[in-house]
Image (cartoon, rainbow, N blue to C red; front, side, top):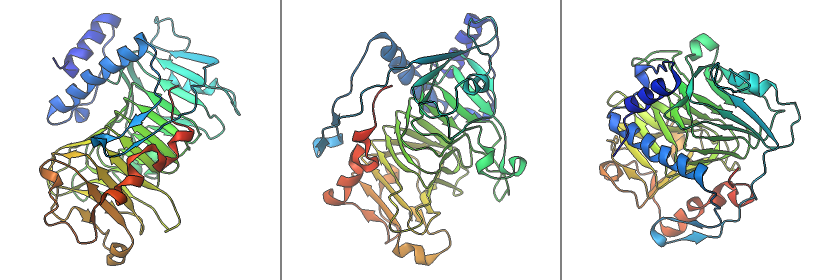
Length: 375
């Protein structure tokens, strides 16, 4: 039985004696999508913490392809920081304080364990603090939130509630939120980033990213997202990252006809950036575009993905520049759902062949065999 978000929060109130508030903007429509994701991944969180599991192979969907995955061995944490509300026994009450305590030039895995709670903080991990893991008690109960917009912060990038500049970052079992309300159509300066990642070789497991316009700024670097939930309205996965999204849930809260799932910014033919969505689910309001060509060589593919959200028949938008139609790389491979129908798609997108799909189906797309592992 799915555990409702309200029930999870109620349990938290009873268990801790404090009230956890979440902005109404973050509750998806239909609510069951987020509730079901929370329940499923809370169970995974509990299983992960009750027994040790080792991932040594990666089996790709459909049985068409498989690749031996030999991720780096887990790096044992030699420093631990704990964060919780007053009286919880944790050393720190602010996530920012725990990060500040980690020395510059850190060269060991340092885990920051955050107890159940709602933490209103604007946080940035600088480039000189690599190997940090942020670990919550479940995305339904550990929530890091702030409410800046591009207009208030000075830029879209600076509106991020949580930003990571360093390499080898890991996030597990928590929610990153930008609590700014969804902007009306045509609004200027209302981009509101929940999370910005600029470091290389970052991993995300069972993490929720909640926002509206520009929710997840996948700015640059190689990244791996597993079992994550991403909610937004316009360009809610965007940037010039080279990222592999596996079994993630993307949920649109866009006004009909005004939204887009992605805006990838590959700028040159030589760059290796792009977004690969494998065995994901796309739900929510629509119709929306699958992607907009922020960069002239923008690259996005969806493989074995169920697209139940309504999609604008064209599927993709050239950002007002017809020249980009000759250089972007957009495709689908064995997708399902009403939104996967390719009738009416622009003729510069692709229904991928097996050979065309193969480079995007495995961790090799992000050189993952070298660094994806369990920390």
